[in-house]
Image (cartoon, rainbow, N blue to C red; front, side, top):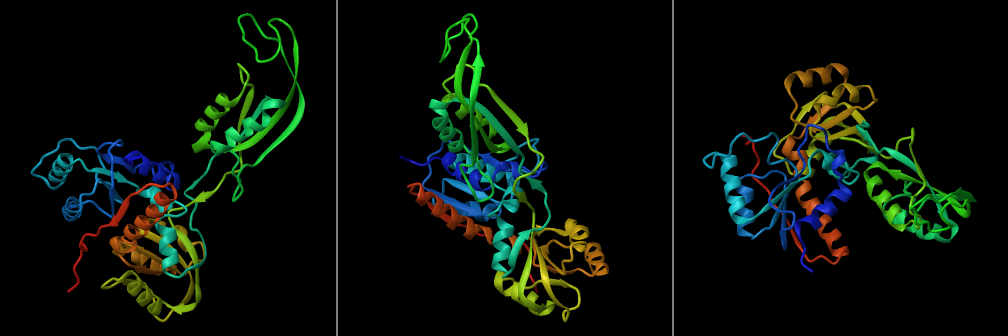
Length: 371
């Protein structure tokens, strides 16, 4: 069976769910059709003329980018402008474009996790909780004869996940009563007569993002004409997600030595450093792209060093004053690793599903030149 864009989007959104994206972001299908058949997929940090030239040469059907092609609504499309020219060429060629931006930053297997592991951090944890899963308790009453069938249906639709455990549920037996009204078609009992039924009270936990599909599965699997169920929003939150990571270096290291390690690991011409190069440190924060806005929060968490990009002068001064060292490895330098990583990850996920596709990482030249 041929693979369409929608199939690949489903894999992306399973691991990098759209609800993780910031409100100001514009992730998702940017251009083209979700029903287009594809055989080759390119993964790139940005979409520019160089990336498109490579994609057309390779006969790519879908380009997945980290940075959105469209951040703000377009008022016009001028084919003589750089963006307008790209749009014209992609529409003519039939290429689709999909973006995973801040949801890819924050996801469990996203850029910041990859970067933290690549830079040698241990005991990696979320840096700052930007989002937490909303959890609901689903309670449904079902005849004993159908309790297992219903449990399998709602667990199969995504209910029952607690930490690293799946299929979590609880049930207790009891007696349900009901009187079928006029015009009803009851599974048990007769119209107008009080009925007692041997039932289970089945409970499970549902994450908000799976709630609609779980309720649909419940309705489809339940034998009753009218399903009796309760839904409670839980105070305790689920898994934490963050735009950054924190961790420990394997051993105490001088700032200058670690800066050189970051430069070499990421293959950069240079990095910028704030702080005493001889300062010995171990606790590190990682925020790919531009993470300077988190400096005030990071400074209060006992973190000694922040690795990020796009640092401005006054932000550097503020960090210096607070005693926080910074390695500015650049926006592109901290994020371009995603092209190869995401290509390999998606290749493996598609192979598990028997989907025959080729994923190809593409790269643009660096924006900045060092003389």
